[in-house]
Image (cartoon, rainbow, N blue to C red; front, side):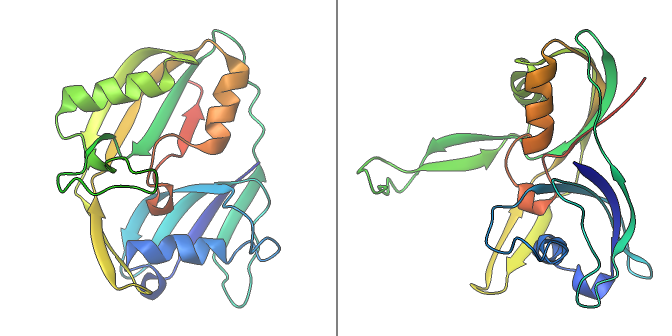
Length: 202
């Protein structure tokens, strides 16, 4: 894997949905494959642009005049059982409920809709469920964030997601499972900068 610092010009990233599209262009050799990158917006400034931390399976490149990549390094963490780590995760904690209009899916079942978890105790419980298979939680801080509003240009559809920034310390109990989760990301809304689990030594 690779970790990269990417700076996207403001005019290319004022709509949150466009950030994902601009990052996709940094991997021209796999246009038809599934996304293999995760990212988190670290800063947004109109005069400077949008600073992004990105984790990817292949090394990104500056393509078609997109000179966005400021730094890249190999990312191969050596994780041991019992190791304590600091972490940061921007996530979209949700739960699924039955569609109020009782619309049916292709199987004839009532569709499920995702709704955000608003209360902090629900958000904490969501995070603990996500990491329980591979980590013991030692400390957790839940930082509430403003909603992300977006617009999909092709369909002109608008929407919003409610993100939360989790910071804390945990201890690894299953290194193999831990690395699989690092690679695939945690929770939904990955196209909007959620799911990247960053780690560092305490």
